[in-house]
Image (cartoon, rainbow, N blue to C red; front, side, top):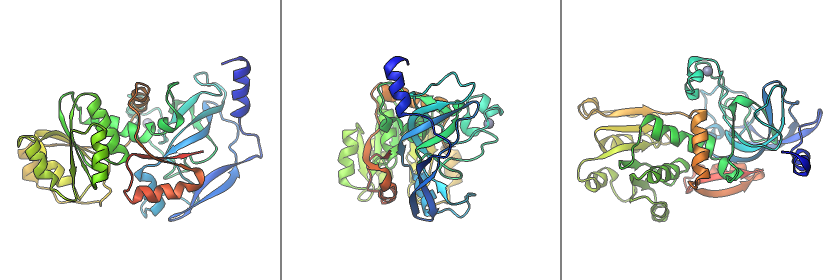
Length: 361
Ligand SMILES: [Zn+2]
């Protein structure tokens, strides 16, 4: 970038000045987030970039963090925001891959970058991962944040900040679940639980994009119509019908190849029952509770394969952004301003959403 455009971008996205303050959303107590002025970060150190945050994606992990989790090691107040997109404000010494004005998303787990898993590109299996930003340590809901340049991924030119803010967690998680873990193939049949959620809508779109048959569950008829409009082949209202028997019926008693889980105790055993022999269940969450009892005879006789999945790799974020650039865009439920972060969380917690909630700076 050069000339007038470069100058303008440089001025608008200028680096922090020593002693200046910035806005940050701080979790100060359980269910209490305040917009505060805090000191701006120093100039980025060697190998770091400074990002001016433009959009934050909300995920269930934000709800967990907001409600409070007794076992999570963290100290309040804490800057919230786990998933974000922004613009490079300045770069530290030695950073040549980015310059001021570049649009980026950031990987929100502070991985070591040197262990065997990191070197193999399996970032979410890092042996020395320090913390998840916005959950254990300060996150992205602030004007400026310094990050290691190696944890930053460029946004394609035709993808908005709003959409890109769904790449590091929602899209990346689903990309990793479906393609790295469950190894979903074109033509297969998949059951997507809670198809109206941020990751549910993403799973429906990604599976349809490679020509799968998608069966999904939702909690009301309005969401059923929206899921159908996204391309789901069969939509089941789990409040009025037993999805297990309907899936058997819809698949000619064979069952599905893949079950996409994140609901937990309410649906987990039912999802296993929906698998064909040798089928794959992949789960990245358990919003309805923590524990279940499982029929182990069924597990081995049916040769079920179960994958636990958490987060994604930097590669998955790049793959997600490439999908967005080619037109596979996130479903956005609501955009809210910074001041209404908690309203967004309450909406997410109430399960009234269809798609993602984005907080705009
Ligand atoms: Zn590592």
